[in-house]
Length: 354
Ligand SMILES: NC(=O)c1ccc[n+]([C@@H]2O[C@H](COP(=O)([O-])OP(=O)(O)OC[C@H]3O[C@@H](n4cnc5c(N)ncnc54)[C@H](O)[C@@H]3O)[C@@H](O)[C@H]2O)c1
Ligand SMILES: O=C(O)C[C@H](O)C(=O)O
Image 1 (tube, rainbow, N blue to C red):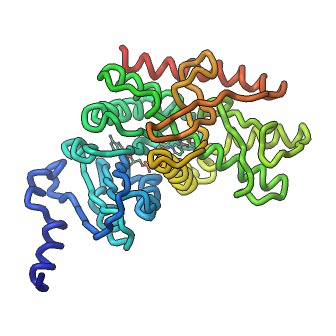
Image 2: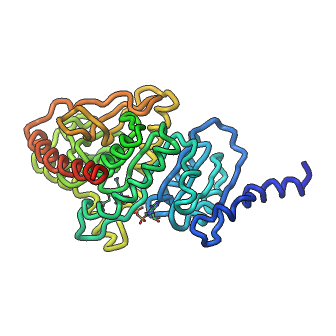
Image 3: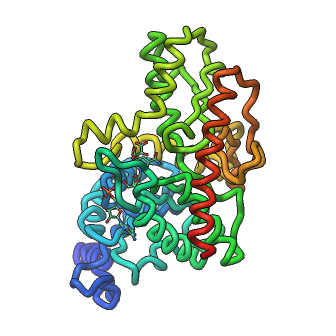
């Protein structure tokens, strides 16, 4: 191939002939595509909401993941710019951008894993449930497209309120006849990441060595750290237990208040999302003993969804683990968590059924 042919080949990828027909919102913005040589037989991953506060660092970190061969970045705004930027990274994943609803189906077709951080974040004084009115509709629309275009993909939902958005996605998939409880996961990894960090601080440990199971859900009292099951085993005073439980349950609010109106956790969330997505991909690859906490379809309690440890495998979730022995403090916490969680799950289910 001579120099002119090589340049023509690259230009063809940056300006595929059908771009203008695909101009999502009629704005004239072009879908950006970039093909690196790569060659690794990795997984195809789509991020929906890829131009947002979480979406951008998440896209960057997924582009660095050697398990990813194709990375689709979808958003209703700014997808071309983020895609052009990320696509210059010299890692092997091929990056393509998709802008607006008309390009959603193409963004999803053929994907193995779909990660959803689309939606509005909290401002100080708001609860995660205050986001329901806007984010419920966004997650419903995106889930409908997933059911149509990649019904066998593993789906990681980040959009809040997770306690309701996961039941919304499940209801949409049930309606479409595509629901597979092994494939749908609410991302609660940030609660685990925070718990590991805060426990390490209190016990003067390396956070990378600490493993705190966090069960229940992803809002206030539904976030239930099981400090009696921390690894390495730790002996906490009652004061330390109360301090840690409160800090873990309110870690999100701590960031929302510090950002003072500029949004909620984005960087630590992108880190947590990539940690969880990487675990899903290693499970899909067939690696053994991949165990993480997630908010999933569950029989662990009487509620239809609950966060607990799950084993990830070739088909998504291979096993949902029970809670293990709880102490009295955790049993009381569990009752409070279930009470709030039941209402949030019901709200999500009703939203789709109504
Ligand atoms: N699960 C968790 O632990 C966790 C942690 C942090 C934040 N969150 C939640 O993640 C969500 C996103 O937070 P953020 O800080 O990135 O917000 P953001 O406003 O910075 O970004 C959201 C992105 O979603 C896009 N978007 C809006 N509607 C869309 C649609 N219909 N389709 C595709 N994209 C759409 C926006 O254009 C924007 O780029 C919020 O709901 C937030 O509460 C969850
Ligand atoms: O707190 C929020 O609103 C965002 C997220 O759920 C978090 O835990 O940081």
